Length: 186
Image (cartoon, rainbow, N blue to C red; front, side, top):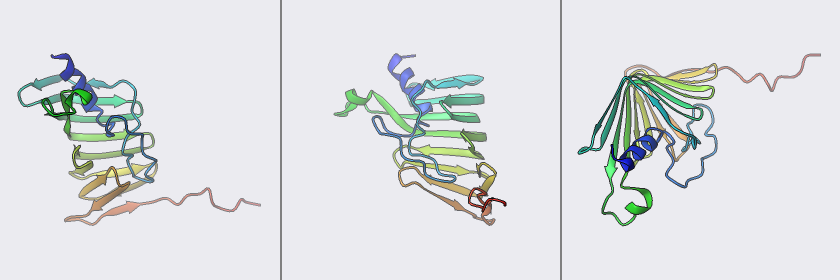
């Protein structure tokens, strides 16, 4: 593998550190919110049964019990596909490298974990240019004991908001009241 593409591939996977280079991590977005940058600055570890890198199309595909981890963020899936955009020839290409992250698609038994928050579903798509994360195929979001389920979840990473759509079924939320604000027993 060519070193610049290898490095881009590793950075892209935890392009799950979804912030652009040099951005500060956004504040916590609240229940079920994902930060615009997961805060990842540590090394990326990816394990899979196989890795296929299509140099001409700039597509990296990991298959077989894929696990990508950086700091407290972990993504598991059957397949993880990373699409890179070739920026060679653009005025700022030398500043940020020859390739940049375009899209990450996790499919098959997807689980995204961050601390006490996790999401499951059949497919997760991170679109870098639009700065959205789309969860489909029976997604369920968990924040501790609380959970929200729907047909489709769209997380707008730069807006600190999420939309859960019911589609052919209704959105379901199970929320447990915060017990910290109860009056102390006498």
